[in-house]
Image 1 (cartoon, rainbow, N blue to C red):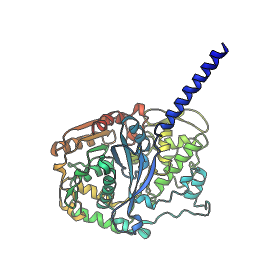
Image 2: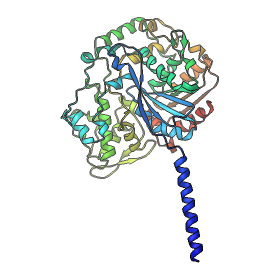
Image 3: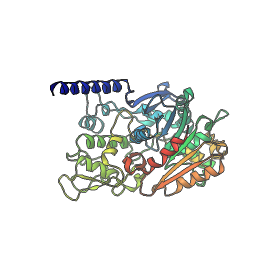
Length: 449
C-alpha cells in the first residue's frame, strides 16, 4: 500500500505542477488603468489641453466602447458597469472618459483613501501632510473655462475616439444622460468637413439623447444665456451653495466613510454646510447616511440626476443602519463615488456645455447654433447601429427621441429598451443580477464586429 500511496502523491504533485504552469502561462487579468490623452488647443493654459480615460478590460481587445459621463458625472460612474460588460462581451475594452475639467480637481488626499483625512482637508480646510485645500474660483482662476463648451468637448473626445480606433479596432461611442446627447452630437458633428459618425461603429445612449421636439432655442436666447455665462462663474453649482466643487467633495467624502467605516455614526450628519435635506431624521451610520442622500425616496427631488433605488433606513438601531433593496446596493454606490483615480462626480461642470447641447437638440443648423458655433450638420446621414435605454427619470422621452433619430437618419438597425424600475443612475450602479440595461446592451455590443 505504501508504494501505491507514494505514487498517488507524486501524481497529484505532477497534476498540481501542470495546473500551476498553465496558470503562469495564462494571460493575467487586466487591471484598470487611468491615462491622459492630448486634447484640443482650447482657451486657457496648454496644461489643460488634455482629457482622461479609465480603461477597463483587455488591451488586446479589437473593440472599444468609449463612454461619456453626464451632467456632473465622471469616468468613475462607469467603473463597475464597465467591469460587468467586459466580463460578458469577449474581445471588448471599455474606455470611460473624463472631460478636461478633471485637471482642475485636487484629488490628492482622496487618493489616499482615508475618510478622516479627506474630511479634514476638503471640508474643514485643515492642513494634511503639508497641504491645504484651495478650491478653484472659476471667475477669478479659470475665466477661460467659459468657452469650454460643446466644440471643446467634442474635439477632446475625438482624439480619444481616434486613439481607441487605432490598429483597426471597432469603436462604439456611448454616454449616460448628457453624455448620450453628446454621443448624438458627435455622430452629427462636422469636424472640418468630416462627419463624426465616420469615426465610430455604433452608438449607445443611456437615459440621454438629443430631442428634436424640444422647444427651439432662439438666437437671442442663445446670446442672453451666453452673456450670463461670460459675466458669471464658468461652472454650475448643483447644491446652490455658491461652491461648485462641493457636490463632488460631499459625494466622495460620504462614499469613503461608507466604504471604510460603514457602521460608525455618520460623520457628515452634523456638518453645517451639508444641506439638511441630505441628513436622515435619526442618528444613522455612515452607510445609512450615504444611502439616504442618494436614494430616490429620500434624496431631494431636484437631484434626480444622482438618484438610485438603493433601499431604506432600517426600522431600528442607534445609529440606524441601512437595508439594501431594489436595484443598487449601497456599497456599489459608495465604490462608484469613492474610488480614485477617476471619481464619479465632476467637481467643475462647465455651464457652456449644456447650453450648446440645447442648441444642438434641433439636429440641424439653426440661428442659435450659428450664434454658439454648434456644427450639427450630418444627423440625417448617420449610418451606424444604435442602442437606447430609458429609465423612469426620462419617462419614455429618451427612447422616443432615439426612435425619431433612427427613423430620420440612415441607422441600419436599432435596439430600444426601458425600465421604469430604474432611476437615472441605476443602469450604472445596479447589481448585475438585476441590471436590465446590462442584459439588453450586451447582445447589442456582441453583434458589433
